[in-house]
Length: 138
Image (cartoon, rainbow, N blue to C red; front, side, top):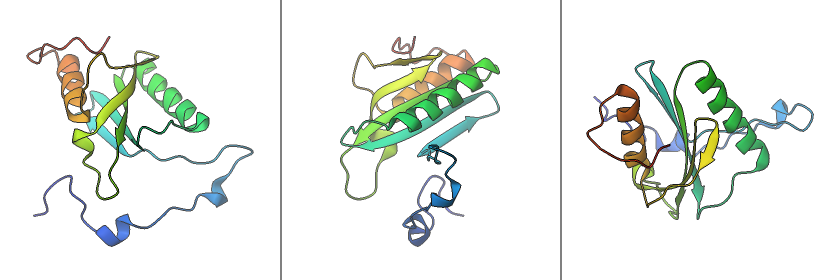
């Protein structure tokens, strides 16, 4: 059995996606680097940016609307933007969160926090278990 979460087919992972046939007016597709749907109770989305590059306006707007729509539907949602400086495989779990969206607003972490730490805190907060005792999410 293959280990979960690892790259299964490196050759397929190297393939670039061409979305040029899916442009509508000035709107084109965007990608999401990671998505955790946790037991039909919550969502965590992850976008990794090299050296902390800023998200393009359209990508940011799409993520805001997706996050807010899920929140409005009753599904708690956290959207993490993280930075990395890797030229090789990216260790997403240990990437540093630069900003996050939750409860209809963008926030900046009050301390250095990894994607894994932020995800753990959010999942525990939603599930009602407060053993991590962090106050970084509003």
